[in-house]
Length: 283
Image (cartoon, rainbow, N blue to C red; front, side, top):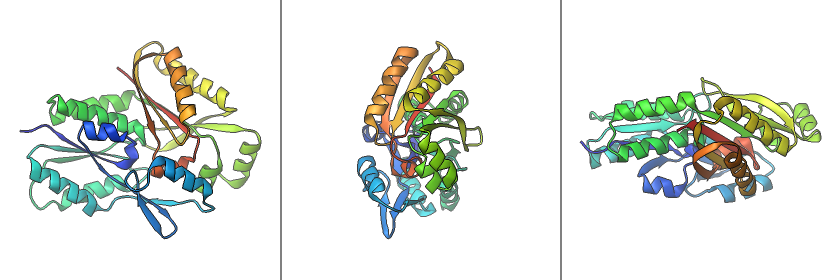
């Protein structure tokens, strides 16, 4: 039997070069600006998206892949080999993407070994798991061994999103206009995370960007102390912010591996530009 094949969706925000190197098959979500539809990471990449987002007076909408799109990917991989397929997806609490993949699995007309996994995470939070799964597959690990690896990572991972502006949370209906206006006037920076059910929640609200970064470092110190860590940092059109945070992480933690990536159009629709996220697992 050939090595396990790895499928994910575009909200995993895995750098394109890693997708190619590790043979990760990515099914894109979509972003809609009025009548115009773009495939996340295919014909709409991060830089172009945030330029268009800032210039637009209307918040774009997003949509998940159809079951047929997942079905086509599963069938293509099944034709190539009889290897098991692991398909990792954005938290089902945030999107119907996982359910689309489940429906596709049930639509297969011939027996194919497909396991669909609800990551309970978003962005490189589960992208980091997908990369680890693909690396394990390349090393010849079995499907069950890879699932155990990812389960351990999910239980041990901590993640924090630092949102630069409240505008997009307000536009997306997560906070009211009055709260957004007051927060902007007071330079409030929300720090967000995700709970065990895959839902976003507010960890803290801090005045000023630098104080918010320091607060995230404080939280991670509480979580991990001096343990050796692997870290992912994702930014929404804020490369300088990501690099600044990367240096802070190197200064304060025992970092064994660090990956910088970009928040893509679908996740970026809801976080807005300037967001920086950190995803941390013990080695």
